[in-house]
Figure (spheres, rainbow, N blue to C red):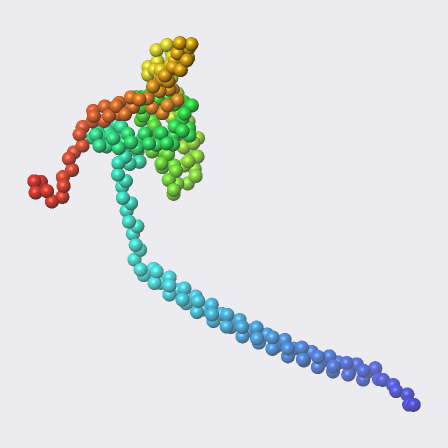
Length: 241
């Protein structure tokens, strides 16, 4: 068998040729992938251009349309946002204000916050009534559905403590007799103690824990009657007017 010898130079030339062929095939594949990527990129850019054009047209149309003015909010009827007892109220307005304040005090303020410092003669104290009216208006403003939480926080931390102090001061000389106050300004009847002769005494007409004493409605009606009568409302189509 004849000896088979490889020339190193020939081997190098063959290897170089093989590498050149592989490189060419790789370059061809890379060129194909790059072409596909560029084609896709061109499609995406075209789509973005169409979208941008549509957005531009929409913005131009919006800018060309006149802005609609928001309708003015109707002013709420009496008692409004800050009722004032010192205004020249007629009897109808005064009654609406009494109903508005009483409903809020009885159903919200008294049962939740004010029972420990409340006394049933509260309505007789003019200064206290004015403070409660302001507190009520502030409460509705603070707990409005669109109000930020800082409003209610301020009501709890600032306005209620202020009126709580006024309640204590104004009602200090009212209620049950006690040491240093034998004759309260607005007394609360003392419960009759049971005895052998009267084991079940009748309960008092009201207690210091009641929202208002029995004279409340009569007193309020008297207060309203001191106001001027409400002006008569003319009917539409009345030939006499």
